[in-house]
Image 1 (tube, rainbow, N blue to C red):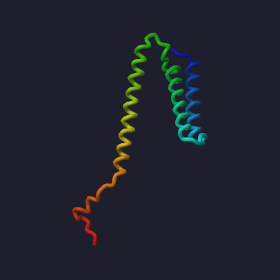
Image 2: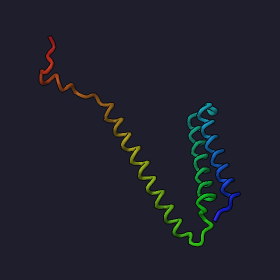
Image 3: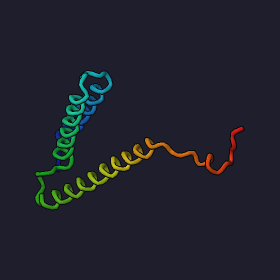
Image 4: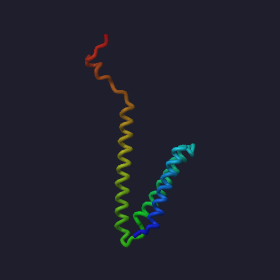
Length: 113
């Protein structure tokens, strides 16, 4: 199990990485959108590693195969959720971009004078 020092280090690194990402977006430190996205992804991966190593103790357990299987399963679920969400949002945007026919015009519900 972890010690208080490891948990404190993990908490400090997590807060530092979160504040760094927040500050970069808030103050618009980077001007290029591509650089901003790549830096945020790098900070997110660093945050993931800190969480896995210092809080979840991945790699230091006696039966690492079960933790690896659970981690892979969780990553698959997250990929399905994120991919499905992006797919739905794209289809909603695509549906809203099309012009809708005026359904009242054909039925003369509201005739024009």
